[in-house]
Length: 358
Figure (cartoon, helix red, strand yellow):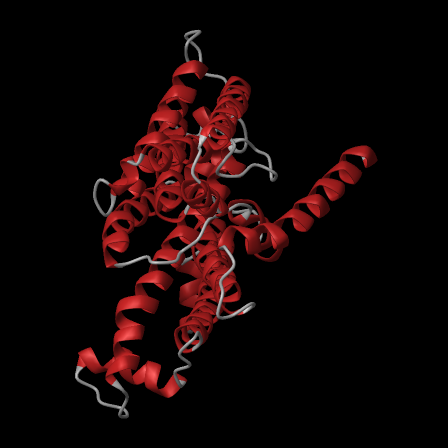
């Protein structure tokens, strides 16, 4: 009786969509929680998982087991902020990647398509080379964020300079601006005389989460969570935009407002991610694509799952970077590139075979 009532109230297609979303959220949440627990417990100071759980539960008034004060400080002040920043970065890149792929109707698009990441990187490199990054604690991420946002406005301004917006013009503008920013980065690297400064630039470009604190969480968290929430709220419009502008307009989407707004928000959260972590490649490409293969192309499912999947992927990559050559660390961007580059080639070859068969 109850099942029949639910079936009448909720159309079967919507019920299936909700079931798919619930299953994906449950699976990815469990995966993320498991990765977080492993990451919190491993490192130069190995901490039993039971102690990690007890430390996390203690502020709620639940005492599970005794633990050392050193373990508490390491978990609360070093590992949790780093993991939270990594999860936020992965969430931003996953959502931005799914958004860009939908807006450009291209599964090979990623958050760096319109040059935002390169703009943030160029600003950060200049800040490190000139010493501006040492003016105060959060100077580097704030300068990188300003560079990313400025690049986004520059690319979009070029795309609408003719008086009419075009996705093709936007992509080509992004490619041109990204090439210019990369050339600027190369010029600064060549011109830097000090090895220490050069090493700092290369470390930042490789992407990493070392020395991240709660200040980085407060800087990035609100912008990423609000921006991601906005995109999720408009995921139905993303579906309609994938059908083409004319069809989207006929179904009530204000294309001239919604597309620029979604592009701006996706660029903003990409810029925030780059600002606090450096260049971490391929997350926004491979996470949405893998989830699309499993859960389908509907953005009402894909976008929120890309947030969880991106968070899990970056936290896992950071765990590998921290432990694979312990006590030294690799950079997170190196790990994601090692994983992402072969997967990108697989997607490219698969896409070419599909096109050739048409």
